[in-house]
Picture 1 (tube, rainbow, N blue to C red):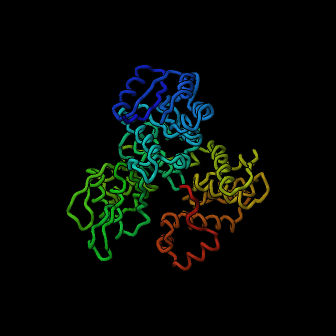
Picture 2 (cartoon, one colour):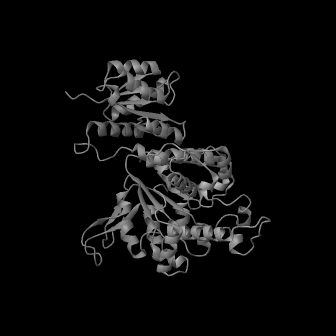
Picture 3 (cartoon, rainbow, N blue to C red):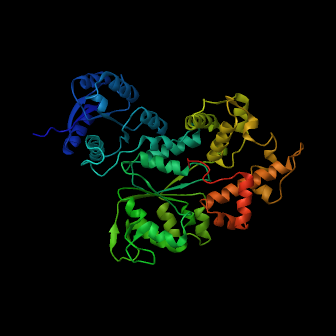
Length: 481
């Protein structure tokens, strides 16, 4: 007789616990129920469970305490090998990351249908029972590292609104359009939405629409059959098909050619497409998210972007604010990046003094969070054994200089309306910063393609390469987007 995998439900609401137990039973899992943290720990000492499904707060024990206590009290054969899964409508992304670091298997929103919660628990249980290479289901567990990388740091009103929106839309399958300037964390937001969604068991599939040559975009999206065109020596599965039962993230959607937009529109609308060279239609279950740093509505008005595709993508908009709009989040961002950098570089933890922190909060950061991270990385690497970073380590303009140009790409500077401040400016340094910023932005928009970046700046490719070398600008700028 086969013994069913056993799951422990910890929920003070008896009715909810009972209904979840029935859903788990329908998925082939045996379930026991307890109401308090103490009862949960007592059950772990006498029974072997493959998973624990718990509320975020049981009154006498929260999820973090349960993770630690279950490991400490139980033997390796019992609760130490159990996957802990939190089901709750409370808690933000930072809490998800904190619990993931402590061993949490998954954090599911309470609004999910019980059948989906039960199915996710079943997937996690099976993945632990049947390791890679065995008879495990095809779904993959969400990687805690993805959750860590998807953190959106900040307690400002602007960031709380973003996090609250993500929390609401993550469990749904609605199409999402993420907007915001370069460096604001659009891909992080997309990864967080995916990590908190029922599709998190499969990896998110990403396509940078600005980095792929136009003639290769269609086979990249939809795949091709053997012999579809010169060089098509075999069958290729496209990104839409790869993202079946997962999420497809279309980055830099504004760079997509007008012709391809019509084909993507049908795929987004019908979740159906044809491989290049084939007449057979393929249907997929895909959640689509897109991101752009340009004004798509303006592109629609200029006839550069299809209006129907714009409205199909802009079902649920998420706008990532510029760092200048929430400078009060600079201190926690600094702490987060310093911890990350010290871990990556194997260096002692550095700190930023109050005066330097005040200076960092006065700068507008035109490159946004990515510019702040890059500035911190440069300062950490170049200060050697010194444990405190100073304002001079960040090469920021002197106080008052920002008013002269409002940031490296301020329109006033480019239009000649800049006013020389009473104290004057270091013209060479100012122009050098402007050139480095323009070089970096062009290279990023071209996804590292120097020919395209040179065209944007009306330069020869060889001239661009020389300027990049002198300015010390390299791509990619950072492992985190």
